[in-house]
Length: 351
Ligand code: KG4
Ligand code: ZN
Image 1 (cartoon, rainbow, N blue to C red):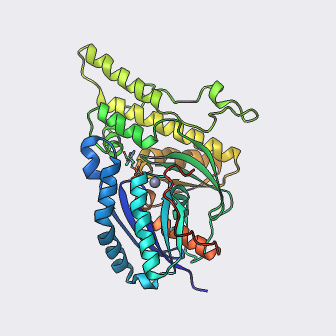
Image 2: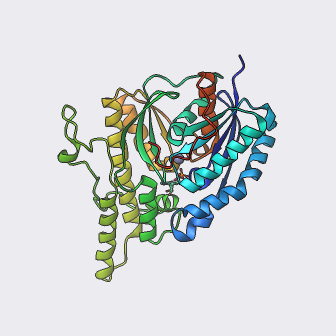
Image 3: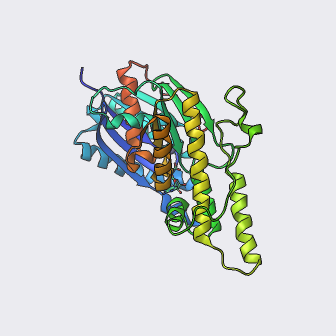
């Protein structure tokens, strides 16, 4: 049988993404972002995001269909992010997906955003109906999430091994950039400043790495695989204050470099250990922070040392997009999974 042609819709945060795949073949990946509208607030404003989805949806859909050279009636199924994410933003995508599915008489699949981030790993494959290798894991790092997942099967079994207990990694970049006067989004701004600084100038804390949080491999602590970035944020603020109160110039580049090193160090060390302890042989990196050069470099180094195969998709597939939703949808169709009901809700806190 031919691989399923699936339309994927993503609206969980500030990106309106429409993707079209045939099995693992990427036909279109169109994204419209409202990031600039949030810039002056220094973070995503939910209602602005929802309104932007409403405006961008149809033009983005039209562009994706044109790029793929298909019409809505050609698709085998429609997949849409049902959660987790911003409730209002999710509702725009879900409502639109239901309308399309109903009008065109297509099955509808509500999917989990995080699982979709992992599913994107299939799009690089040359086989139209490839499956993920056994024991695949994913490190997802963006403005909204910081998680390590173990994927037994994309269609049924995904296990959360660890996550942040406070700020997401990208959020930490954004907040620290604001503190250092570097602008929004903070990730690229910090990375650029860090490139001119000394990553060893300051020793900033690596959260939740003390034995009382991590325990041992035999007696794992509650936060063995979890992250915390609030202490790091405070440490940066204190360093800035000390220079300011002494009337000295703040060494922004050194602070940015040392901050970035602390985030990347603790992200990679905990990820590699979680992978080793949970028998993960293939690791996928996803989320906007995956664009960070130092993160790619250190994770590549540490995965190689641990014998873990690391896959880093292009940044356009790492950040939020519709192609990942379509890719997961194609897996669900091929696996014969029953479509969602038309009453499927937006579940902002879906695990
Ligand atoms: O996945 P994404 O585009 O949107 C969501 O948050 O869902 O991720 C955006 C996040 C922002 O926090 C941004 O500061 C961060 O990714 N980011 C980076 C870099 N580029 C983007 N963080 C560190 N280094 C970068 N080069
Ligand atoms: Zn995401």
